[in-house]
Length: 456
Image (cartoon, rainbow, N blue to C red; front, side):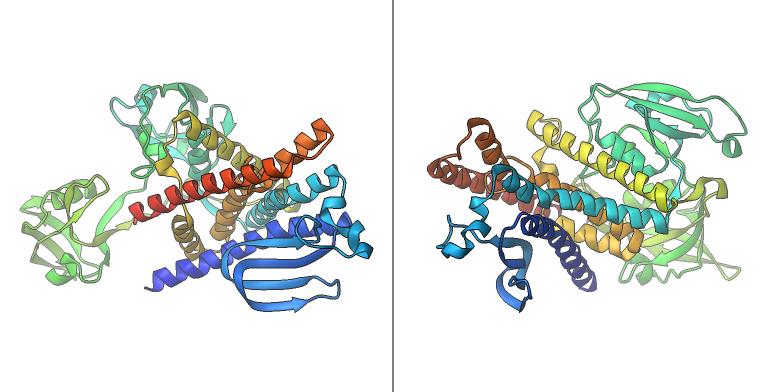
């Protein structure tokens, strides 16, 4: 329940910030173009706070935090006094109207740069993207690793962290091939070899983001430090807790076989749902035996597996693999702008791949997934939350630029037609377009919500 309210609160904060940035873009440019703004609202429905400013604009915070709007004086909507006609939106030049409408999405891109700028100034604890194995018969099997190697570029795009690798790979979903540039880490491999580039055949690459990351889907084995079989956590009401297993216990034997590898232990547990497992543990210098019956649980494939509810102690990452991703005052601007551009490019690619079928509509996410992401990133700390809202801000800007008549992009489409033809699009045509756009948008929202509930 606490997680629910944390995610909900983080979602409201994130969405409120992004909506404010978007609507302020419209508001700021409208005022600069001489348009009278009657209301600036964050949220829809009943107002929970309102104030009329010295500029005559009514500022409102409403009950439903799923959007916002800037209400401008417009003769198409209401009667306008003769002395205010020159301040009506519809009386402005087509280029002024284009500037006002496009200012919202542009503000989202600017906000993303600002959020990432602060994130880079603070610094993000990061891990170098090092692989130590590849999966047989996978696209990555051609790499033929003999020592740990660091991924330094994906199809020519430099990468420094796993997050950047992940983002770069996502942009190549549906492509016939991906190139990885690899460099050995002398501290891990004991070798100092030149950078090599390997071309992966991804024509038959199957990637389901619901089940795995693009990294593991390619067959790349992520280097991780060793695992100590000392129990670091025991889940509440789990089979392990019921059996009396405690934090600090160390695995020695499982069903009479000496412990050798955590993954092998996990395999035994998962294949023993509702079956007894005998475990020998070292507790404060003494050996003890416990019987545990793993609880049955379905995994993402619908297969029943056993779960005992314990976590091992993770060894520390080598110092040479850890670094702080941070920049100076000037370099942070460059890095934040570059990252925002990468997010824009990848987002447009994903939209295109939705239409080509390379990406399934099952991957669309709605407010529930966004709320979960907001809660998770906020729980990790400010820098991760800033990165998350920068990503959502970019997506919000791009979605609003889609040429659907109910969105900013639809209005821009009409205005550019007006630029070309020299006259406004007929009101009847606009009305039909708005109905079509609203229907399509509701359909997409329905699919996204359905996906959210299916994930839950």
